Length: 194
Ligand code: MN
Picture 1 (cartoon, rainbow, N blue to C red):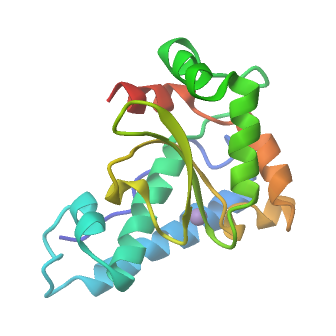
Picture 2 (tube, rainbow, N blue to C red):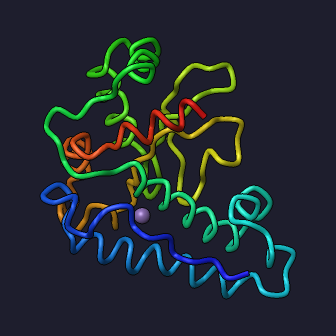
């Protein structure tokens, strides 16, 4: 079963000026596509050949895991983004849950951005729901993903250099400061509601 690159949930230039169409061309069109191509090249004749993507992520390791998890992580990341809005903020039950776990929205953003800025090397920073129901910020390295844990992923930000280098060069904190305009809180709320 060949895996396919899922369509982007927005136009390539929809995230400008925070994330350029050129970044999307490379990040989605080259990096995300390459993970799909490599997974499809790696699984024929293996136990993963007819498995759906989430099962592959949960059951594989090595190169198969790296490519499958990166496909899943990137699709989740694109779904976390939408066109920029200056007053972008969570509402309702999601806002209540963030306030309950982090104090208020500003403290949450500060803690998330600090965690993401300090995520050494390539990786992802996540907002997850713990099995007990509280929210937590988690860093993962390389392709690692909460999908293999008991945590429910709610939101992610890609902190691999390819996510921001065209637009922000080495300044990861500038990318993290701007990305709050883009977060699709409706998607995050859906993940919280399950
Ligand atoms: Mn990426």
